[in-house]
Image (cartoon, rainbow, N blue to C red; front, side):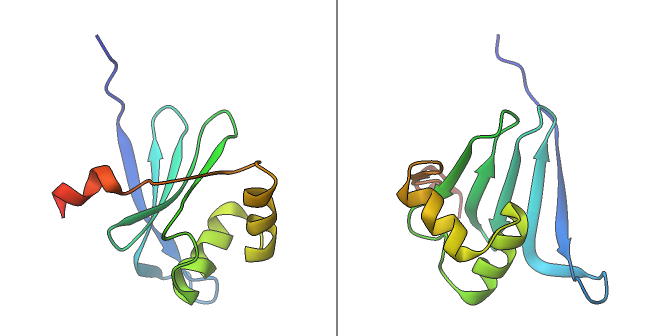
Length: 102
């Protein structure tokens, strides 16, 4: 039988005020995986073992998404693009299976 993990969801916090940012979330899974979600789209996943998956269509969708994705990964958009290009990050579709739930 597969284990069911619990998860916690938190809004990103403003660097200036510390207030929660609407529609920008970090989901932490009990096993240590972390997911960045912007609105209803999964943007990036960091696994407990250090692997990163980036959504092929939405990773650089808007300035807001890019800002919080950069904060989540602790790097610039340029650094993220380099890691996609050199294969460090897996560029994949993280949202197609979620479409039926929207």
